[in-house]
Structures are given as C-alpha cells and as structure tokens.
Length: 123
Image 1 (cartoon, one colour):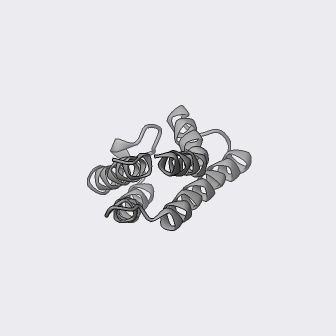
Image 2 (tube, rainbow, N blue to C red):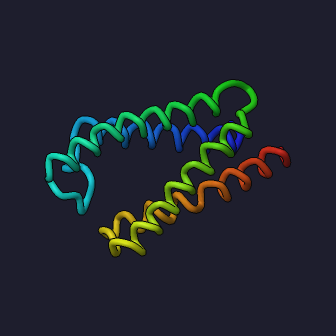
C-alpha cells in the first residue's frame, strides 16, 4: 500500500470513528466539554459532519491511485479548522490540553499529505 493511500485510509477511518463517537456520545466523549444541552446538540450534529469528512478521505484513498487533489483539499480544510482553534484561543482563551494535540495534527495535515505524496512518487 502506498504511503498516500495509507494516510488517507488512516485519516478517513479515524475521522469517521471520531464523528460516530461524537454523534452517539455527545460532549461526554470529548475532554473538557461542558454538558450544556446546546453544546451537546452541536457536538452531535458536527459529529455527523466529521464522519462525512472522514468518508471523503476514505473515498480519496480508494482505487489504485489515491486522489491527491482531493486529499490536498481535505488536508487544507483540516488546517483551516486548526486556524479556527487559534482564533478561538486568542479570543476566548486556551481550551483543554487535548485540543492542543488536535491543533497540532490539524496544522500538520497538509505537510503530511505532501510528504506522503513525495514518498509515493519515489516508489
């Protein structure tokens, strides 16, 4: 399996699973979340969106050649989401430390896609 395919499958599976957990568990599955009904409703709704995002990664990783253009777009969206976390930090304050880990992953996504694409080209 190519590095780009492996990255797409791992990212897609992880995002789909996290989205499913958010849909089923709401705020209880994410560290630092309040149990406010509005926040719980939002987390469950966004869980379905995140699961769909994961399915997008899985589709991009299908077939003999992964769809690099689509993976770049998906990684860019993840990085923009990370920038949203940076804005929230500046305006509201630092979140639970777990979200700092997510921020690092989100900002690294485009770099990881390019590294995997170069590894594919070398194969």
